[in-house]
Amino acid sequence: MMQPMLVPHPANPSDAISQIMANAKRRRDMLSLSFRTLGRRDEVRWPDRLPSGFSDGLWQHSCFEGFVAIEGDSSYVELNMTSSRRWAAYRFDDYRAGMRRAEATPHSPFTWMGFDTTLLIQWRIPELPQDRVWQVGLSAVIETFDDTKNYFALAHPPGNPDFHNRDCFTLRVPPPDRP
Image (cartoon, rainbow, N blue to C red; front, side, top):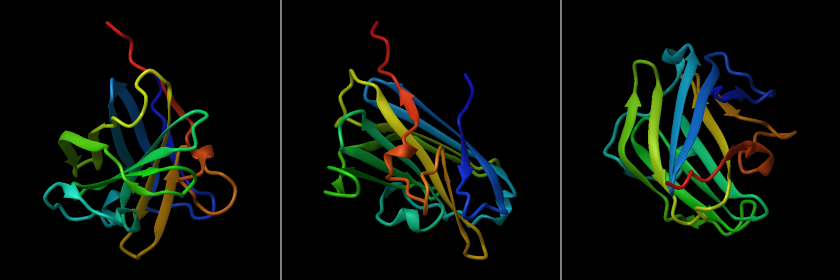
């Protein structure tokens, strides 16, 4: 199976990072996400390592994101994760509406491999039906040392970068086969 690539938003292509390889795999209520950047990684301002835990506002700096929804349902879950090992999970009732903390939590281990800038994380997402296909959007904000921010996603709708737009949720992750 071919690994999905995140591409930069056409309005602000990245000079430092050319592409991001990403992947999503599912097992029951667990969603495994991986991201690996390609390009001049030493030009990126990666957040410093901190104790693992919840933090708001991670998207304001270099951050990887996952959006998970069910087709035909306006609600969705947003997952944020950084090289610092900080994370956030939010539930929305509709497009950018009704935001609150989600029940989704990262499952250990939370792995950041700085030598090749790969992030691996498993999320437990109990809010979503386990017997339905999950629509997934994968994205990233990449901040360079000159304070430029670049926006990567599987797909970009017209206009400004907007990872909450359902047009970005292009990856379909089926329910796992039952034993």
